[in-house]
Picture 1: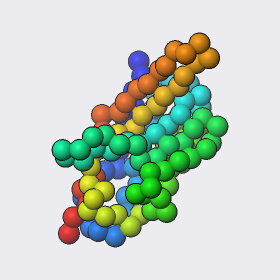
Picture 2: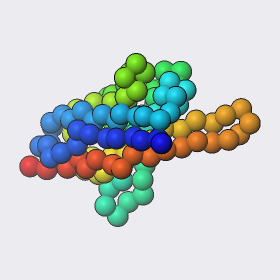
Picture 3: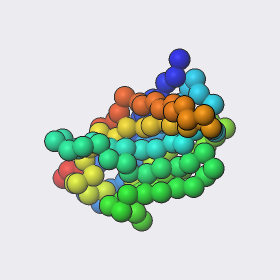
Length: 120
């Protein structure tokens, strides 16, 4: 059974920092691309940051230089360090694991989400 369990969300003041964690089980973690998405109220889910199985990282323009994604394959965990938080970063943050096999089979799994609220 695949599980992705996020933690680390909460209430933080503008300019503050939070570190999200996503612990995975039931998958061959190092073979999966690991991503963080977020969904704000009334908006579509959007990709925030991605860490490929090969170690490449990508970020949404809105979080570049403020957020850092990292992964620890030994701990089956992916992190999202969020600095200089803004009210517009308020959203439910979701962890995603995905892998596409050479035959085209796609595996994708989601966590349950963790709420980040940036407010004074």
